[in-house]
Length: 115
Length: 115
Image 1 (tube, rainbow over the protein chains, first blue to last red):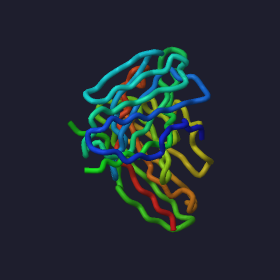
Image 2: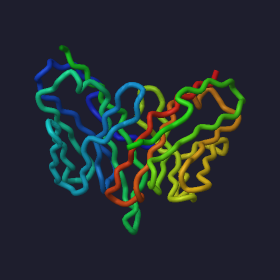
Image 3: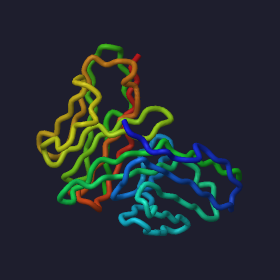
Image 4: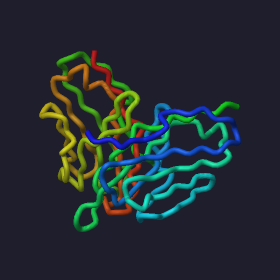
């Protein structure tokens, strides 16, 4: 099935550093989402973006919906050990009438923090 | 409140056997989704229910896969004649109405291993 291009695949960072990851697609999406998945758990929604150009923050997390609607990025500021996990971007189409389509995920960015 | 639950958490079966995976969505959620996540990949869409009916089953890989939601709440994903390639984590998600800004909440998944 279709998957988005997400980079980097993995990264090690020093606690306190800022992190940036991004996602690109060959097709346009109506919605971009960022999820975090911990081992043995399902993905948990971090940020949802619904309009091209939208910039949204959730605590230390900031994400933007690219103006072309084909890309998005996620920034994490001042990383802490509990930020460790796998981050997934997901794009979503919207059907005629407004109902949501299924999510199409990237392959994930594995974040490891050096204590 | 209770989130999405999935049973069993782990299932080991032999090639050729039949398996059933269960999903209990969040109470009151009318939309239910099944995804499959292979090792090192993002989740991939399988099927979407709106109420009792399958609104989109375009992600089911072949006719060995089938899912039901007879009363519009609990759903069962059924896999016939399992193959080693079916080994993956099967994730279930639910959302309130399947509307354009609904959040999909994921369960912890069922890890299926086909020997």
